Image 1 (cartoon, rainbow, N blue to C red):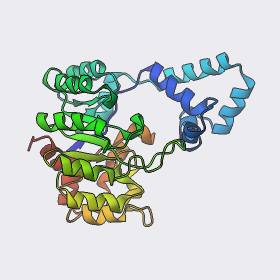
Image 2: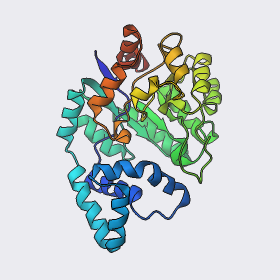
Image 3: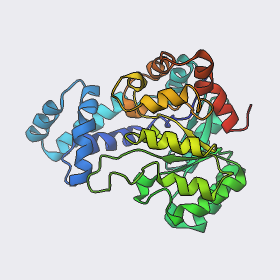
Length: 314
């Protein structure tokens, strides 16, 4: 079955991996972000062949400089080349994928290097006002980007905040979809419902021509997102960063999406792996999606056809 992945990240540099290791495994002072260490730290420790307790022991035994050097060395081992990343995409059976990074030029250079495999999505700061709007227009018209990502979590404002609206208007004018982070967050210094699906209702009402993708599936407000998508045909859903096999697990909270996504909303679900967040091989994420108890024709829509229509490629 053909696959389009709308949830790929650029392969991170050694420096970027080291920064993430220090975030999740270091001595975190902030109460809110420390919660991410509790939840995701064990996964990153396992990537180094250690437990979080092992990491804490080493951190206590070593000086700060020595501990950081240990993580810098580990980051080198976890770094993969662009060519190796492309091979992973090919081995997963992915025809092409959507990539992003905070650096527009870096994203553009990567896409230009592998134009048949990747398309770019722009990450922009809504607080920069018209400068961000001009950046979006330039990214699309000059660099070939095909989507815009709005993150309530990163900017600490909800999706229906007026600061996002000029960017939504420009995206609608350019006829590109906007991906909006739609799920809970674990930062206990931010409201849990900062990116609740209900916040997208005002956006969809104000911009009925704008194609909106609710990124990360809306969990734990999945029924609310299902209702939103049923109400607005311009709203799509992906389950990026959630392990696919759990979507079909009774009691997981995904039951309404599995029911309506297999029937009334089968044309409004797209595949996005979020494999870098899951810490598992990309090919395994794809295979778990393909194993979901969906009708074959629906799987083809989720994995491929709906993405084509989203980008007017059908």
